[in-house]
Image (cartoon, rainbow, N blue to C red; front, side, top):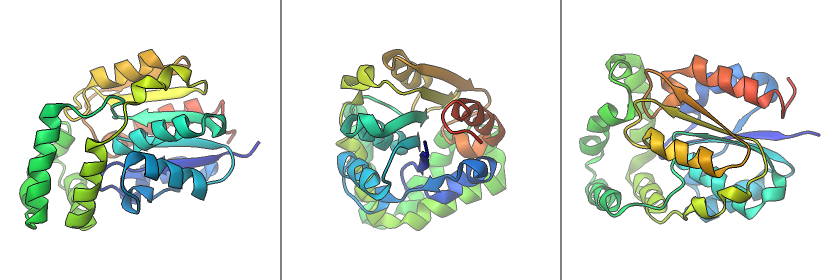
Length: 235
């Protein structure tokens, strides 16, 4: 059976954050979706992804992309052959994070993007990787390029995300859960919770890595994905 491997970026992300995976998984012909930039709300993003990618799917989502992947599995469980959930959170927004995001949204609306995004590097990356100029520049470039409108809309989508924990126990496909050991934005306990809820899960903790797994430790991420995918999509 032919499966489509769909890579789902995180908030303000694009194919740049999947560059190493597009190369390392080329024989699985992955595609990067941009539904997060064209639809408001996680459910609408998931519905568009399902509509635009017919047939059976293997979904690999990072951060907000993982939220979209989990929602797609809720909407069409019979079509999802595998879920890879990288640095994401199945629970609803906490009040503390909602306040932080609402404050950021206000500043984005004033055009003060760099004021919020540049300090975020220290939270998004492991300290070792935050000192890599090329890595940091690539991250800042695509996040700032998303623009205020997208940053506002996607943060609002995350604030109003559904509680995926309510349906993960019914997921019957293989699930790979990955998290950076030093992830400050979606801490390891979030990934442990997801792995504990999904019946066919495998949990991989990535050392010397923060939230941006695909960029910080591409070799480790690719190796885990290739091993996991080999049972779903033959090379």
